[in-house]
Length: 257
Image (spheres, rainbow, N blue to C red):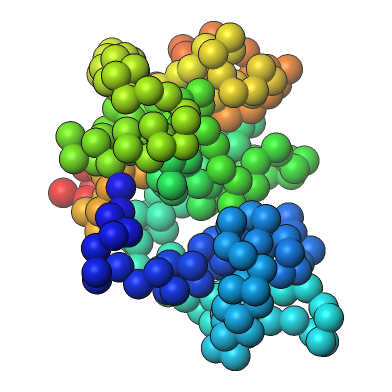
């Protein structure tokens, strides 16, 4: 967990970045009050920060009382970041094929403040919209994606995650270590993580996930495959889709060596 008491920590910068992170793909715009409610930052402070972010091009709004949207500078920054992670482009063709072959949503998620943030998706060709969009945050302890991440963290990363989850009331610190060991055994045994329906955050969603640590990234990312229970049965996920996803990620790992 970041030590905000460290004199090197720039609180104003952190608050500005939290405003940018508050936006979701489904938003049609956010007002200062909306941003304040999502971030916990007082509205007068939000007003000053949104003014500054607009002046720098990271936010935009059409007229005086219009709602804010991410601006061109944020788009440029996102594109530069995406281009710097070569594993995403390298994985693209195989992950798209896997999505088409399995009829499931394939995606990448990263850790973000105690949750798993969806950052990239591949959808089956000609499919209807599937429940998850880029920007969606999955719970750490009750999703297959979170379970896969938990299986791959270092001891230092685990301690940081435990501090975040304990502070947010997600779990007591002493209960997280057994969950980590369970996740490690799950991934080592089958090659992927899977949270059963009765423990999953959504009783309608079925998924499997595989961790991957890219050399250009400071922490693990997670590849996942998901669909509703009506679309894909658990037996299919565990017998065919999970192993296929694990092989695809292993191939990505081998090519990076």
